Length: 318
Image 1: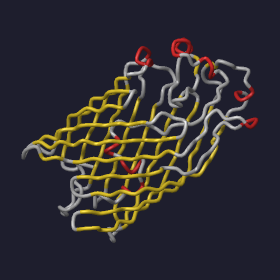
Image 2 (image 1 turned 90 degrees about the vertical axis):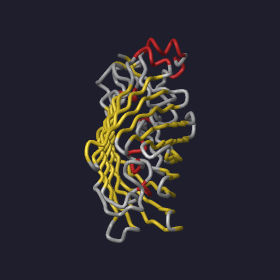
Image 3 (image 1 turned 30 degrees about the horizontal axis):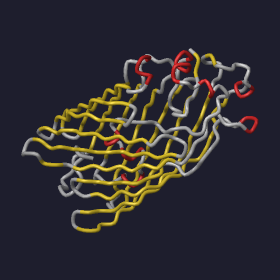
Image 4 (image 1 turned 135 degrees about the horizontal axis):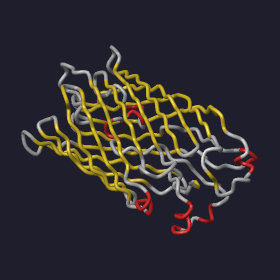
């Protein structure tokens, strides 16, 4: 399999596909930006993209997720994420930790971020939180894995071994009992990950996230939960993801989502017992890559410690 990173930097494409989609001009391996991991069930692990979210549930919340993207395509992204957060005794302060591990072709990336939030009560039912995140990113590339379009490129002569870069992020999170909206930048740092000979194969750029959601009571048994995520990054197509989930009897979830010009998804979940949720999503690609993979799978496990407090966001919602 021959790999190349396209302008959508998270796509690893077979050589035959390059001729079909006209990307032969990118044989120099130069690119402008690298995207962060994409999750379909982002609404269940918001702290991974917005540090202001930590502590907002008013109780301990633990989330683990696994994503296998473009199954069947060699070198496609495989991502694991773990997040934990909780308010302190002073429930205006929240703390948390988010850990992510991802493999894309010959590259491996690991990061750990500690999050902190401070919440201001604007009204009896509305809160505004400000968050900061700080951590480290470890990046490895083994160029001996796979075949490349230009194997004699000097950039491929030396592996990248545990390159360490800092992570500094921030966000805001405005929410009530049945709605939320948040704006965040998970990392303000910009780094050239492949910078030998003053060139760059993968450059990290600032990414801006806007998220939101609402819960509608359709009847005593069914709730409707629309949500959206918008992501902007310089020199990269604007990403918009909208989802619609239905919650039955405060236990079973079923829905669908659409990522503009990229994928459609089906989502399902169940609260196995109080506080423990299992979610699954399947993405069908709408791009030319659909001919070379059998879709993307994502599993979420979430445990939210039950609380006697009633006037907080329900863990089932956000």
